[in-house]
Length: 351
Image (cartoon, rainbow, N blue to C red; front, top):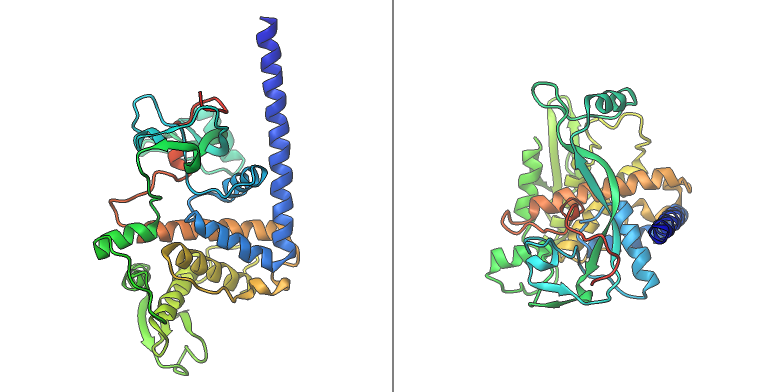
């Protein structure tokens, strides 16, 4: 009994130390992003390699652990349940004995009591309810959950299910498109245009210097009776796709609707969010773009860590949604933050 209590106390102490370490690392990384625009660009490039499948907290948490182990992470899944229908077990791969798990924040889902729901609503939190007004099952918190990198597993061959690879399989019968100078290797242009039109905007190619467009590569116009996206008609296919993605990002970031009341949405921040989303999505899809927006201008955030955090969370949320919309419907990835809930084993190492 005494031995079990001692182990429990040690476990709680280790957990507390880990949480302190996570917070310190998170704050340090935010401070670097807020102080140096080059760090922001590096962050966006790193996120692109994961396809924006993790939240800001989990991006930082995985990078912290990978840096401690001096390794480059590739793709994470939990151990898998006993039935073998989730995690690495689903892909007929097993975690090698003795491998140390990575930790991520996984959502805890349950139905809150009416008392809890009313308390949360009084605090300003949104509570999901059914048609009868009763609280439904929803995310009520987060816990640290175990996950493992591909390099920690053995078994059947596994290819990371990126959006880029899924689209290539669907559109080219598995053949990798040849990269031609100025061409667009992603094949997403028409789909981007559709997403813009689905959002209620007309889309047109226009001559440079024409009304609304002026000297810009692209522009999203909103006003009395006008909701239109214009992109230059004389640019390369690659630039056309990238610019169209940028304008879609403006729409998805709610830069054109006024719904983000109370936020400091000056032009520098809007352009940074839109360009970061476009760069991240294009990189994840296999189109190598060069970020050139106001992320290079130190004054856009003025070292404000809260502002940088809000911006990063918006970029990740919007990029993740766009990439999901551009992925073939039958090739959804099982490595998102939500999919990890409930699949991981409690232990820190593989048994």
